[in-house]
Amino acid sequence: MTLFPPVMRPGWGPSAVLPHESASGSIPRVAFLTHPGFDASKNIPKFTVNSRMLGLEWMSMMVAGVLACYLLERRSFRL
Image (cartoon, rainbow, N blue to C red; front, side, top):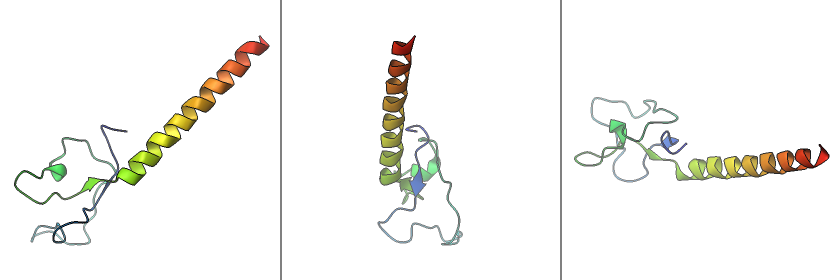
């Protein structure tokens, strides 16, 4: 999840769209961290990490892990 975080359009600066691109152009749902769309060295980035969605994914994975550990522990006592 951290290598392929969910992305969204940035909320800063101009529409963050190059002149030859349309404002309604689609962006990927997730992108690899080295994707050029994250590059802010010389341009306005095309997208940014959707931190709310990433946090939700992390929390759901933690809950799933805790539930899995609980179920495995509960199952091992029955044997």
